[in-house]
Image (tube, rainbow, N blue to C red; front, side, top):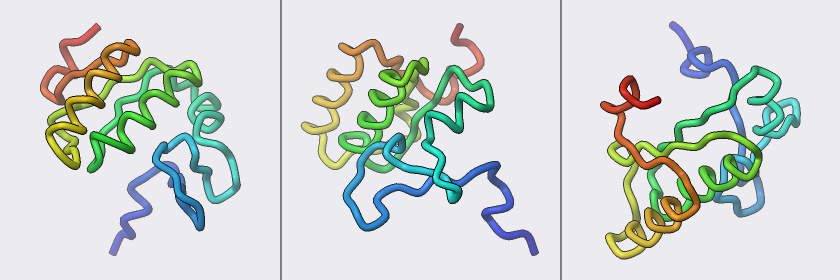
Length: 110
């Protein structure tokens, strides 16, 4: 039987004994920062999804953008804590230039 971890190229751990919203606050098992791991693989664009569209998703998208990646949030694969917090996060990300899209639009975007 295949371990679920075998389906991924890398696992990034965040929030290990310290609060963390952004995936960019995490590191690989070898201690490499997510931004460095992505850059080493030639990644220039990231798609962000998650359970907390009002918290962790915007933190990750904005940190990714700050690290030089083109960031998109797939809104149909994410959910917020509340409608009010989600709307505020969507506005904040849109104002920062984060692409807000859906998974069915992935192949049609530039």
